[in-house]
Amino acid sequence: MRKLFQFIFRIRAFLLFLLLEGVSLYLLYRSNTYHNAAFYQSSNYYVGRVLEFQSEVSEYFKLTDVNKTLAAENAASEPA
Image (cartoon, rainbow, N blue to C red; front, side, top):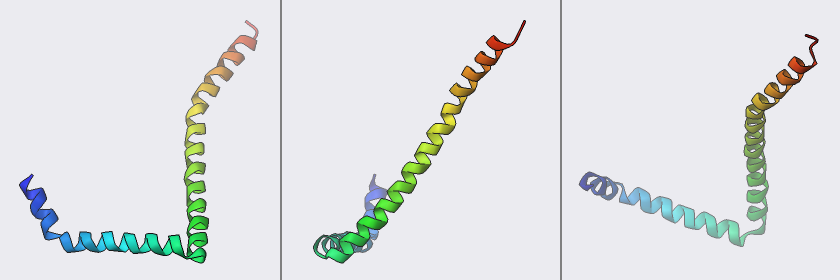
């Protein structure tokens, strides 16, 4: 725990920089219409890509269930 505090104390200037940078970007995007629209357009694009990937992954895992039902149907329809 002490080493963690020492590490945070060592990089306190960088952490302060990141905090101030985040606040400044928040204020920029909130107060400027152009930057706000550009931010939401790009964020919507990336969120759409992530959701598309998530959908593809979930469809891939559902293929196991579909494969089992098709195998059962094929076994039932084969003449004995």
